[in-house]
Image (cartoon, rainbow, N blue to C red; front, side):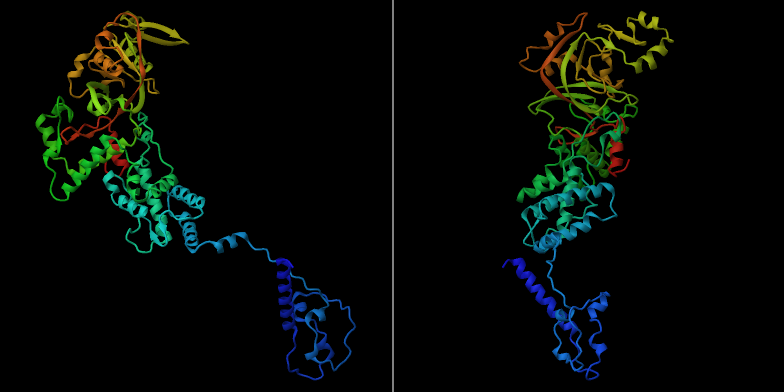
Length: 544
């Protein structure tokens, strides 16, 4: 006999017993012998369902029929009893087989993921984490046998120090690391706080292009579920794994250390003037603030800057470090716009440094990363339409012939005026330009107006960057062992364009840092030339 047949037999017996009990008459009748009508009234179940019973046996005519001798209900109704197997819901069965820990997590997860008082970004974050828990069969990341795992304690310790990296997790209530019996709600709260930390550490709080359309930097955000899984899998080093989502660049780490130092000192005493410096090396005091202010007023203004104001500026600059690629390249070029300076870095050391002229406030130099690919000696200058229409034509009173007479090549292509300046000493690009093709059509180049490098506030261009001592820079970017010395590159000066390809593309990063730490460990502040730092501070809730 199969298990199904046994179940049917048991169910049939249970139904028959229940029916017999339902149809049994009281032990004491109101009248003896019973009336015929009482004997043949429809049974309660038949009356309940309004069913029609067709008898197949002869009526009982014996008026002395004893109620106690009544046959079972099945005999009276002349029906065949069947036992139908109950169809169980597989989800109910699976639920009943889950450990209590998983059932608690599932119930908490359902309420947590569907909370309606959150914004769309928070809802998306929780939905991603809910999917991660579902994918791992509701196994907790952080709790085991009713206690915190080592990874949870390490991650909670790092979360408590989130402010050291300029992060703001006040909206995410992390659970207590010392809680003896963490709950399912604690599990979910920890996962959400860790995911939020990882996202903020990679720059999720600000979309760079919203600061300006000329900010071409891109942030690469982590998958929150993968971030939680990675940190959870790090065990006792989970705190280090979480902190590693912040930039690892040396410049960022210096600012982070200075932020901690300033906050520690603010808690005990006012910041001293020695904590920050106006300049170092060949950069003068006048580089710190616009030249319109006297040296005394500039120094006084810097000394009176509140520690909290400096902290906000440091945090804003730390945020802009998150916009840079994780790997800047062992060999690279960095241009810091507010510092009006360029540096060539090889193997972590600055091998060449020079001054640059950057875009005016009205025509900012874009911020982005790319790669230098080749140099052009004796370049032509293709006059951009914006300069042609806004400056050259109005200056010539619309006289194209006058433009041609001044040494420019004038032609028409597709009905549009095209103006080029041939190579030469008067060429706006000077004798050499450095190419890294990009969407902003900017590059580094020489200039015939070399006297402008003597100014401390060097924002004079239409967006491109002019380089001081460009042939020395050419030797630096071509690199040792290339065979291209400064003198050899100079020998190419002439009347026609000459190209020099780099052996391999050299990463270049056009940056915007108004605060950094100098070689002496002091904070250097630079003017917010384009107002980007103020916008970042405002976006982070640090004040405009």
